[in-house]
Amino acid sequence: MGAPARDCPHRRCNEDRDHRRREGFRVAAQTFGYSSGGPLFTVGFKFIPAAFGNWLLKAGVQFLVLNSNLQTVNTGDSFVPIGSVGMAMTY
Image (cartoon, rainbow, N blue to C red):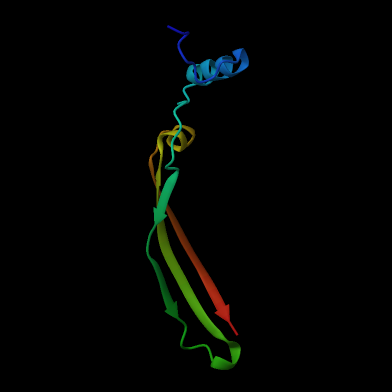
């Protein structure tokens, strides 16, 4: 029988892992970070003459779904909506 395998044999690595546990961070490796998506709506300003370009009003909402590591640093929220409103002009 050999010694049990350790994933990090260095003392410094073990101290870092213990510190992260004390601070409330999870140590487990994760492959999922976040997912995002949502609708974007555009409305054209037809009252502006075409000589001044194509003007649009844009509004949308984007939804983020966070993994547990990002949830920890985002005040415990795993679902975050982000709204946006703006104007665009192409010429």
